Image 1 (cartoon, rainbow, N blue to C red):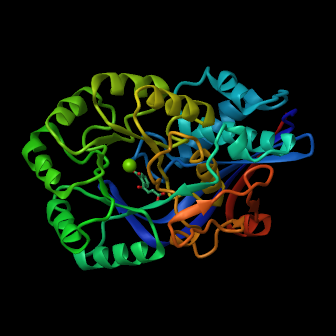
Image 2 (image 1 turned 180 degrees about the vertical axis):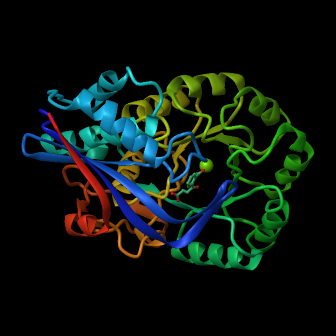
Image 3 (image 1 turned 60 degrees about the horizontal axis):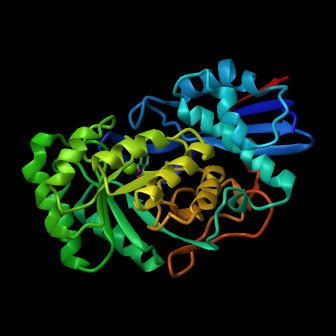
Length: 369
Ligand code: OSB
Ligand code: MG
């Protein structure tokens, strides 16, 4: 495919319900999409950078700027036969992984269409349905959280993950366990603790959690390995894993027993596949994380989750949990068993609703070769 043009868009998409983590509350997603055009094909990718540089240093304004100024120009006019060629073309720019992932994934998206195969198949996946869990943010009250959990369990979700932070943790987990002793339950701290909290974190062990996600600093393996040695609960790393090298280093050190893969955080599908492989070498299971994606990113997460080592339910859930109307057709839906069926259609398997995308777009720029 010869890349003739690249379109960058920002969409304003209000969330059905606010989402709160240890670093703050989000009411509206500023969704960034990129489209690569060439050979009469269109590939779509989503840049999952946040509204603010809180989850990671990337944020939408920075991602927009680096794509328009440096990354897109490196692809324009190039003839690219596979998404796997994109990292090499973008390698000169350091970091900016979410920005790079948006472009790389758009090329994979187009490649699947060009080859007439499903994206999940192109990525090397083999599952025909994927297991789904939900991530539930910090709420205004414990009661509100318990109600949300009840709704998600009734919908069939196989694993409940709750956000925790100092002041919203042990009491909350105790109430959840008192009501649902047997469910698959995990928690995500988004780096809200330090090693000084060791005795407090050890209290989490009584709740038989599947994992505690990213308890300590977002850039650390060493102190997570010290913590893992003193916890029964498995640590899962999210923020700290940016590459397959990170995964290998963290697992060699014993910093985690589970890895969350977010394709944006690691810089695109190529690196996500490499992280998946690195974890498999250590016999460590992975699961697919989410970044409150629109349908474009969501459909890509579904495709990635079909790989063999995605052995735990991911944060890949139905469109309607986030959006009144998603920008893909059909929307992502789950079965009463908490699974998403994978389509046997070329490409991402979900059509982009261009009319709706245009309605929601607040900023758009097209770069030509
Ligand atoms: O840490 O997994 C996280 C959302 C935004 C930023 C970070 C995280 C999350 C989630 C939501 O937990 C996952 C989702 O449902 O998309
Ligand atoms: Mg997380």
